[in-house]
Length: 187
Image (cartoon, rainbow, N blue to C red; front, side, top):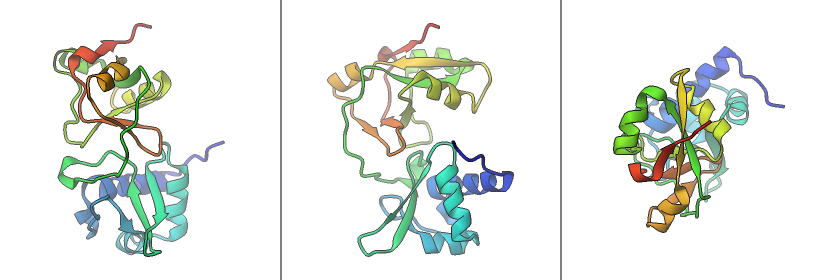
């Protein structure tokens, strides 16, 4: 059973996302090449306790953050994925053979341009794909109530030379999805 975060914890989760995915400079932090920052520096910069951080990391809805000891024994934290292009991060994820089909939830208003131009990362480093329809629906509904789920022929893309990675929280990442590998999922 998952714990529901309080409003304050949700605000903290959003602040962590901003700092660790998009704008570390807003907290006076610098991410290393792989997106990590020492936990102690983050706690001091955001003026939060370790307990507050641990609750948000453990219970946020998408396992957005990872904490690990560095080679020097110093604990570090980073966002699992979703970094802006302006904060280029090498997640160190090896290429992985994807399943035959992955999914992408998006507002219906985006359907025509996507079917024409494909999926691009826009301001992010990667296109994010979901392993199942239910997750894709949740992702799509963050932006709109009228959403469509797209099927991405990931196996065919991989066979054509496109590279896929899978983050620790199960999100599939790729540089872009050409329109020819996308179809609207029929209900």
